[in-house]
Image: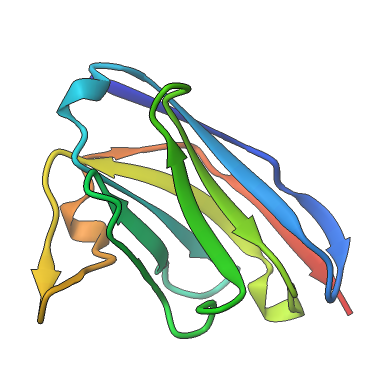
Length: 128
C-alpha cells in the first residue's frame, strides 16, 4: 500500500503562486507514475499534470506554461508549482500514484483511471 498526503493549498489572489506538495509513504517502490488532479464544485475531476519515473511530464492545456510538476525521489515527494493563478484554478487538488503509466502518441497520459492510490486533497482558492 501507498499513502499520499497533500499540503500547500490555500487562498491567494489572481496572479499569485502556490506550491503543492504530496508526501508518499509505504511501498513507494511500486510507484511508476504520479499525477495531480483537481475537482471544482459541481464539476468533474480533471487531470492537471503527470510525471513518470523517467521524468516525462504532461500537462492539461489549461495549465500548460503556468504549472510545473516535479518530484524529489530522495524525499519521496511530488510537487506542483502553480504560477499566474486564475480564479478558474479554484478546486480541490488531489495527488495520485500508479504502478504503471499510459502513453498515447508517445506522450504520457494524465489518466485518473490508471491511478491506484489517492490522497485526500488540498484546497486551492483563487480570488479575483
